[in-house]
Amino acid sequence: MPHTSPQMRALLSACEQFRGAEAPGGYRNGLALCVIDSVQSTGVNYTSVGKVLDRYRTYRRAQGADPAVDGAVELLSSFDELAGTDTWASRIGTRNRTSTRGGILKAEAIRDAARVLTANGNSGAAAGATSPCWRRKGN
Image (cartoon, rainbow, N blue to C red):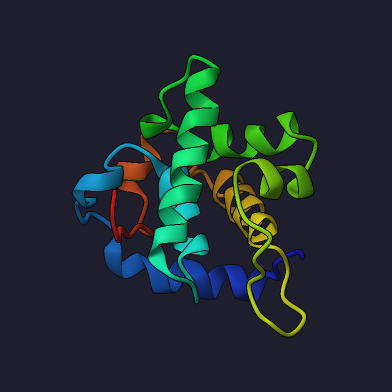
């Protein structure tokens, strides 16, 4: 689902209030974990979010990578490696949707967020610490 220019401007404007803020302890250097947490945590028990984060960490460690420093580029690559959102949802994420009525898979929303961040220069691993859009609910 493509984002319009007005939607992008609204998102960036809302996030601007956090520019220069310090990232919380859990995802200090990992924008990928932050994005996964943010999308997966809407409307669910947080325990399931932790399981998704654990599966992503396991997946990336099996590749010899450190998921704690993954940025949007690495997150986006995981979708390519797994041939899209369906397989990503089955192996790493969940089959949960962003809404009960017509919502997309949360995996699609995660991929879309990573695309938007990458397209707007917040793509590297270090973006986790400097991105204006971060949050943390747990490790």
